[in-house]
Image (cartoon, rainbow, N blue to C red; front, top):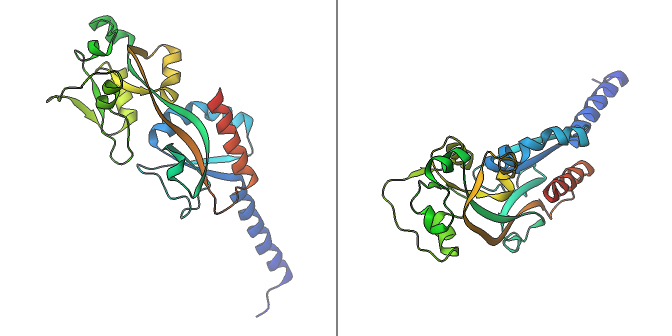
Length: 229
């Protein structure tokens, strides 16, 4: 049975609408911490700057293989030389401080040196898949050995780590690019008098195997602009 011309036009219109929808949707793969702490505070600005683009954020505990997924952009931390199949654009250097709330330091005193921190409640991030700087590495960068402790608070989600700090449970490591809004607002304060610059960084990545469409390029450039502000 032959398809009528009107049916063909309807089908083509539907296909055109689906294609247009795919072009205006851009998916970004990222960790939950990046999505909630870096991206969410900027969503209103994104809507103002790029109102015609729908950003979809896909979170995962591991870095997704964008070559195998229909995802154009991702956020990764580490060394781009380890990702030869990806382009990589610098978003933020990895800078790690110890942070606490003003109420915590008012009640317990301000730890002015890394040695002072050893007498405080330190909250630990136990990252399940991605490698993350820990207290042992942070203290080593300050020339101190971190003693093995029995009882401690350890959490495997960085968002919950920061929530525990905000609840006054102790001091945690703060990745500068993630906690900047809380530091600027005064909700968190750097303590310990030491900053670790790991030499690593966080990047926007996209596969070399395919070209970014115009909307994905605009999202990438917008993210890079936000990283510089």
